[in-house]
Image 1 (cartoon, rainbow, N blue to C red):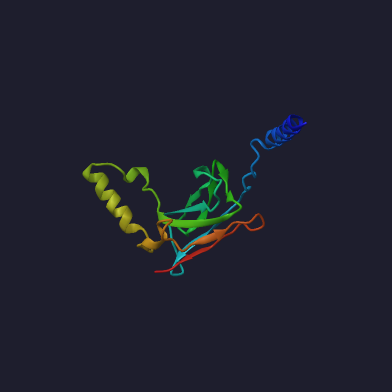
Image 2 (image 1 turned 45 degrees about the vertical axis):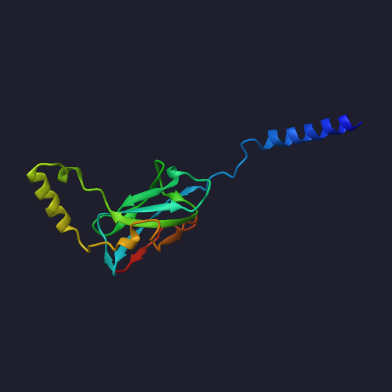
Length: 154
């Protein structure tokens, strides 16, 4: 009788494990996200914004990023899709990668790169916005909101 009960319990446990195998909550949906970044109420052009979801089960493929245009406007991309996952995020703002035509080791490339950097408006970006450890920025992306304006200050 004892053996039969043990086998029954083991069988019930096995069925439960089978049905829950691979069970985990699905990732949050990717929803459209756009906005404007300003520093001291002035547009911040040519910066990269990254949204890092604060979700233990999401890996780096769920980091959304975008680059601002000359008016400080951005649209995010996440894993090849337009937007970011609907979740709470830490947000960083850093210099965008330098355009290809200004990269290189030649003297001419270095002069062009220097001129490009000097032409960027509303600089420098305060360091506190550039790292996850220091950024004070958090944004909760929701399915019913698409626009998120980010206001930085010196």
